[in-house]
Amino acid sequence: MKPNSGTFTAILSLCSHTGQVDKGWQVFKSMTNEYGLIPKPEHFGCMIDLLGRNGRLDEARKLMEIVPEQSTSVFASLLGACRHHLHSDLGEQVAMKLIELDPSDPTPFVMLSNIYAAGGRWTDAERIRMMINDRRLKKLPGYSLMGVA
Image (cartoon, rainbow, N blue to C red; front, side, top):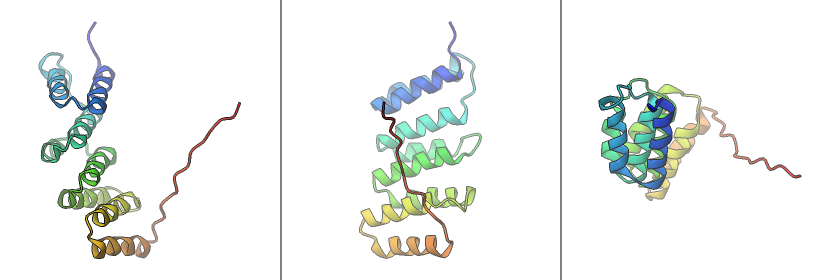
């Protein structure tokens, strides 16, 4: 039985959540080399998430440059990794790209402000928070739903 696109998404996601970088690269490359499938943005997203979770931000950035369709979810994954690893330089670049793709979304502003704050860059964090206010962007608060039987 030949694996399809969904199979590869599931396997790459598994690699991402278990930290198997080398296995992830092997699976990603096998899509084209062994199965003749062209990786889709979701496959790139899984790989970028895998690399980012494991602190390999330079590899993630390089892979980001060849994603066939630029989507906010792929960039958001890399921005999350920048936040986790306190990589403010790359975080700025990724946040600006996200803002370019969707200027009405407050998420990249908030994440960038958090990166700055975590790194002790309080002036920069405040500047970003002021940009959120100046643009009248509203962050929707998170919520959870729980069923009661």
